[in-house]
Image (cartoon, rainbow, N blue to C red):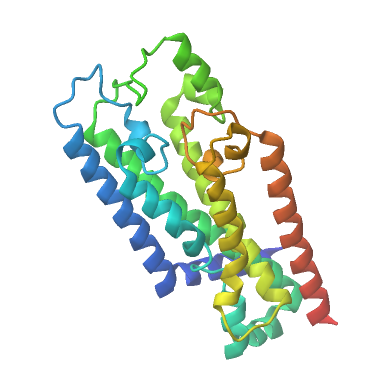
Length: 283
């Protein structure tokens, strides 16, 4: 266990220093900063009564899709590509360079595979959660914490807003502690990116291709097809859009069963593929 934990820590530190990881983080940070300055400029002279709640203006807030389409579009369009870059393709590159064989020779193939899978997950969690945290901090500094407005121009205690809030994921936490709700949302966003990165990594362990772009296609297609549902006029169809569960403050009903099943399928495939590749290579 000590060898496993140490290996995970070392690889996470290594992945965080890779130029692709830095590129992804800088890209996300630029979107965060653009969104921040846009909101500061737009809401500069707003009265505190009508000003949006600061957490509604963070980069993963649904309200951003209504007031700042550039930030929302940039994040949703780039996300399917960015999730694989920090570490998801590491196995494919390292195996071509011979680095994988060197590590496996020192700590064993099973430990290498599982520690690398864990490192890929945690690297993505850090890279994608940190920009959200920065967005939260910037908004807390720039806007009054007592602001409580929303893009629907509904009163804080109106029955309509109460019904909308019930459709939020973790709605009870939002009611009691909206800032903790935003922090949890950032962690969920990072964990979702971590799962997708690990899913990509698992694919690279069982399929070998000299064209690395091939490994990005499964996640990209899954998210693209899911995102298309957001534009549907049918409410039931829109519930299959991944943004509905990753972005905070989405006002529409959620299909929780769909989310649970989708996550379980991806997680089970990731674990099964890693277990198979560990055993295959070991044998």
